[in-house]
Length: 193
Image (tube, rainbow, N blue to C red):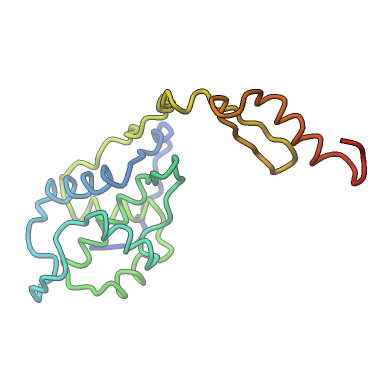
């Protein structure tokens, strides 16, 4: 797999579409689908090392991240990490390099500092005519509905950096309690309460 940057400058065509976003599960599925589409079905290691799988799984993605082979997630939506197109290219490139016999240390050195464009060109070259996935978002940006039992909670910032949440089912007058907490935290010491 050639990881040299493309020699021809990009055309002055239309701007690239927005970056695809993936959850960890969809990143794993997209990497597998891309590798399969490119005909990657052989063991990942020419030596037949069974510890190296042909396709990344969630645990492998997290491990690659800990080694610095994959960048950190773009962001976290709650507890869910959100990955982008670059992460997909890094995961696929890693598996392709492993299939050529590279160790993870060699993969790490090979991918270090590579641009997304260089990764994409190398993956395209290695996979031949396999189409790279569309770069339409795969993560819903619509917030999930708040569960009914949490809707009744009253939350307020009572002082800079201090946020208090009260359950009105357990506190008879949450607004009054929040006002007293705010007053206590923002009043000078010794002021009447």
